[in-house]
Amino acid sequence: MPISSTLTARLGTGPAPAAARWSPYARPSVPEPQGGRGGAKASRTAMRLDPATARLLASAQKAALSGSSRRVKSAAPDAAPAAPARRSRGDEAARPEPDPKPEPEPEAGDNTPTLEKRRASGGGGFVFLRALAGHTEAISGFSVPRGSDKLYSGSVDGSVRVWDRNSGKCVDVIKMGGKVGCMITHGPWVFIGIPKSVEAWNTQTGMKLSLQGPSGLVCSMTVTGEMLFAGTGDGRIIAWKFPSKESNIEPVAILSGHQRAVISLSISATRLYSGSLDKTIRVWDLMTMQCLQTLSEHKAAVTSVLCWEDKLLSCSLDRTVKVWTLSESGNLQVRYTYAEEHGLRTLFGMHRVGKTPVLLCSLHNRNRIRLLDLPSFQEVGTLFSNKEVRTIELADGGPLFTGDCSGELKVWRWAPQDQEAAPAAQA
Image (cartoon, rainbow, N blue to C red; front, side):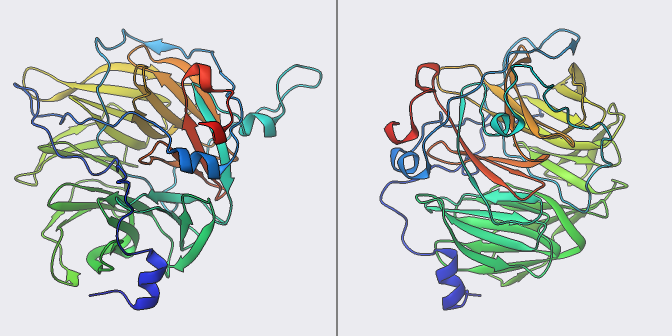
């Protein structure tokens, strides 16, 4: 069903720009390592900022490197993961219980920067570019479609905002008729999880699809070449065959087993991984749609799962990040546990140019993202926000986007150490 001419214009449809943009979700699956069925190896293009975007977004502020390390349990993994497979986000309705510990303010008379200065600073080689204001409640997802110069952001305030990536200006606000629980990208497609539906927009052709089946809010999503999966607030996972020529697509499978909301999904070549507020991770076979294994080692809500090469990473409100690897029997087992002093909300992994991989860990009910070097799990920096960060996304061309519970969207870039002090206009 084509979108109306008005909505088509609002979505920024039309021919792709001459300079092709890389999308972190447009990656082909790669066969798994021989002898295991766990994770699919994928690769991310090294981060480099589009010069035009850098000039127009704002002047960069010098990164503030934070070097304190967190305590860990057991030995670090032998080798660093190669690159992350795509993950999905949780929703506002399924938000875990708040952490009562207050955010400490700088003591009078010390040399610590003010809270506002720290919030605007970067760490670990990241440089803060600018904040994009407009949403009034938590940001629940980003979408950076392939071949588009637009950024889409969804929020619990019930709107999708469309931003021009060259100017940083909001060019449109689309009301969804209900809170946005999550949002992801697949090629030119934008997927928006709302109550009782997943809305799919093709930003190149103007096609709009409505995927029916969920009985409540869609909290998380992930997609393969032919299947779209959505985790819902009632603990089910709905699967559709995608794309389709039909305007209203019915589910081809419903995966049941979780007792509470499924707020994170991640996928490999042969398996689907689901994290839930019921404290478990379930491993599903993509061919049979059957549950192969239930992982119950976390002691609180599992808030994010991330498939990275042949490993699975998970975080929880129990204040740990766990690294899972395949045993000889083919089942996942905990290889390593990193202990954090706060609960964790979101995981995001990426490669830095000329550096080892870095894991971004958003802290629950805190205004910061911890940056951990892999495989050492040593802290290499901190990114600050107004409130807890729910969603993190990397765009083609290099910008990193973070969205927090206050509705603030921040834009960052990563630069080599000798370029951190340089203004963005000279990048």
